[in-house]
Every structure is written in structure tokens, then in C-alpha cells.
Image (cartoon, rainbow, N blue to C red; front, side, top):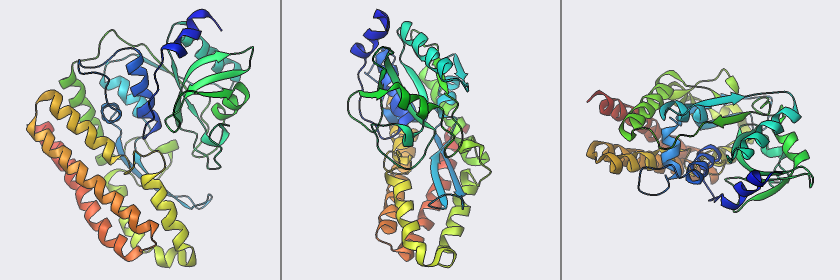
Length: 341
């Protein structure tokens, strides 16, 4: 561990976040002092600047529970760089030594490193469910001690993690697929791109995600975007017949997917609402502020669906979901009108 690498951890401030990727980006931007002159960007702003808004509904009979619902695109980290004109090298490898070397090299440059991990293999989380797309920030590597210090959205403060655990988490072939020690090497600029241009690009990206499906988790063939929202509602109506006595378990899983699985509490819609609100303030844009309120209402709809699912009330959920579907379409239409002005 070099002197430069060791100072990264001392200078790095981690704030607990609602989602792994947007929280990691927020922390790293704050570390580099990159903002728009009003203090560190919010997590929601980082989520939105990454064109994070998306949707995918996947029946996955090979796993438990046999469904998966997610409200973001897989390409958030990459889209963030594109929208802000930040050079990015996305590196994958089968070799643990190579993956660790990339992180060490970034730390020696004084840059914390965002990597993908599997939550099931991170010893400090102690969870069973696999997710190989969990982004964390590595801020120190001590090979003598065999320990790394990492920032994880789900924990306060920096977490010690053995290099063995970190290597397993970075080389996992769990759900939704291998993460191949993925390392995001951003070449951070001295200042961020023009906010109006970055916000416009990011909103265009989110519209494309919802209209065309976007980058699906693990490259899975599954209904996505607004088509996925519609398909989810159609299938949800038939869940009592599809799952029978397992329905309560499926509804419980749905509630977790919406409010607890690193989604910011409302299938990422509350994070997107924060992005729109912050963008409206930054650009002094009343129309965007109105759309932020639409996104807030959508987030509340998803929370209501989660509450119905948690209580096992499928019938009420059906009524709530009809409103959610309409609000998803309305949000995209309002974003399109904003772009077309």
C-alpha cells in the first residue's frame, strides 16, 4: 500500500445511500469536488444523470422467487460517463490478480475505484441472495494485511473486507450473470459538463430506456421499459392462478423488490423525482418541476403497491397497479414534451 493509496481512505467521505451505483457515484464525485457550485450532488441527481430510469420484469423459474422486477437500466455507470462527457474505461477480466491490480493502480493515482461485486459473497453483508451487479467503492487495499476498505451504500462508514471475500464477490457467476471483476475507470475532469446539456442528454437516455427497453439486467431476454410495465401488470392480475398457494411468498418478494432491494425505497422512482427536482432548480425550469411532482406521485404509487403486497392484498394491489401503469406512461410523455420544447 503506497502513501498515495492510503490517503484516499482518509480523504474519502461515505454517506449511506438508497442505491449502490448512484450512491457510489455521488461519493466519488464529492471526493473529487465535482458539483455545480451548490455543494455535493444528491444521490438522485447522480441516478438521473446516469439515465438510470428503466424497468424490467423477468419471470425466472430457475431461481427463488421465480420473478424479478427492477426499475433501472444496467448501463447507469456507463451512461453517466457519456452524459457528462467523462472518459470511461470499462474493464473485465477472469483474473483476480489483474482485477486487483486495476484497483491498486487507481488508488496510486489518488482515485477511489468503483467495481461490481456479488452481495452474496461480501462477508460484511451476510446475505444469501445473489446480485453480481452491486457497485461498491474500493478506497484502500492493504495486501500485507489481506484487507480492503470499501464504501457500500447499505452500510454506514467504510467497511473492512478481506481480499479473499472481495475476490470472490468480484468473480461471481451468480444472478444475473458473471461480473468478471468489472472495474469502472473514470478519467475525472476538473469540472463537470454544462448542466443543461448533461440533463438533456440524460433525459433523452431515460426516455429511450422506457420506450425501447434499454440495457437489460445481465442481458436477459425479458419485457422491459413501458412494454415491461404493461406486461408486469397483465401477469400480476393472473398471479393467484399462476402461483396458487405460493402467492403470499411472491407478493412478499415483490414488496422487497420495490422498497428494500437497493431501490431508493420506491423502485428508483423517488431517486428520479429527486433528479428532476434538482434539475428544475439548477435550470430554473418550472416545467421540469411539474414533471418532478409527477415522478413523486409515481413513487408513491409504487410504495402503495408494495404496502398492498406486503399485507398479502392482491386485489387492492391490482387497483393500485392500474394507476401506476398510467403514471409510468404519463411520466415518459411529460419528459418527451420537455425535450420537444
